[in-house]
Length: 298
Image (cartoon, rainbow, N blue to C red):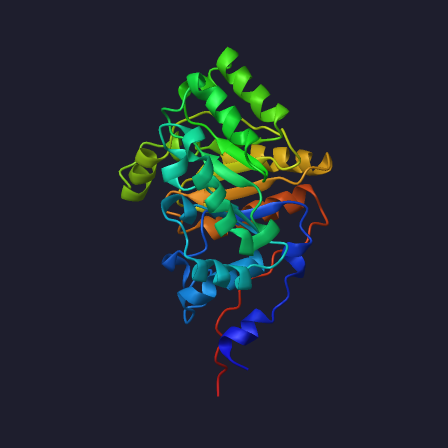
């Protein structure tokens, strides 16, 4: 049996049995080869390997470029039926001057993703920092035109001010059955560092306060941490409690773990699951990707 077919035959029982969705910002980080992925693995194997451990992934790749049909066919082959791919609307849709002018493009994008079926759920709409309260009616019209569940990430300061503008946003999302994505970058911004990876991440990520929301059965959390797993403990602990409470309420949250350069994102995600298992004994263990066999002594 070939290397790929042997790996493809491994069980997905652990990730299938999770009461929540857990993952990283991508599956294709070359830095994971030799740590999370076998050192002898290639990029064409990484999605299938990733899906042996995690049951969800952020769909950041679609924000930057529309995937080719051949790529989607390969993804459909490698993603198990229970897997969730939170595809982002491409930036040329979400960052346009008028969302209502992008309804046809949005429909075309969703039709392109049809081979993935229910694995695309929810679809993410990440709005730019300039998308403010004056455009809420536009957002409402865009949401109303969609046939799939959506989750929206906002970055305008007015939506974090605990005033009328934020209440109006939350009312719109709740009443339309749309989730509000919660970005938590507090760990990332908790240090003054000369580390290039940290400084780069701090330049790219918005410094917004976390807004945990559960407007649907699937709360959405993006935790942006520091490079080393143990550096994030203070900020991770409240999320262990929050996610455990959501699960106990019968919700099925999505939790995505980032680190500044994402080299340790899989380790942080596995650590989060270990912490959550201590809080909720009985959760299935995560399956580890296969590693090269150790050569025995002759």
